[in-house]
Image 1: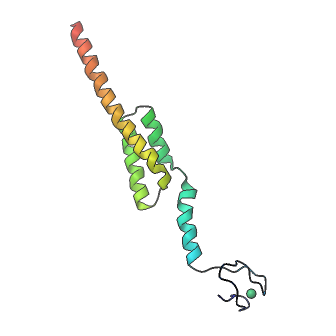
Image 2 (image 1 turned 90 degrees about the vertical axis):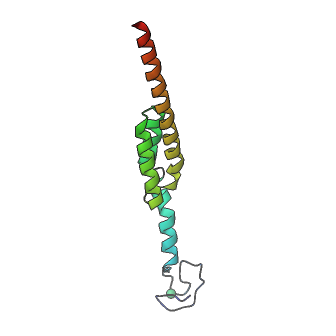
Length: 117
Ligand SMILES: [Zn+2]
């Protein structure tokens, strides 16, 4: 490619012009790459995915499921980081387990109470 400052022919991979020493800005392709790389690095694990996992561990039943689904939708739209996907799924699974546990507790509780009367 040609240097945009002095017009000298320079290597495609080089970031500086050998002739004038100015920084060579690459057009289109590198900026696209940067954008793609920036989405996961900016967000890391999204707050929602962490919230989903934490509330899931705390056994908050429906809350981690909602948070996990919302974050998965955000990941599909490209807003949230893909790294949070594991947390979202873990949060949804833990939330589902928590619902099952809560139902068992309620049934057992009702059975115990009905036994008293
Ligand atoms: Zn130059």
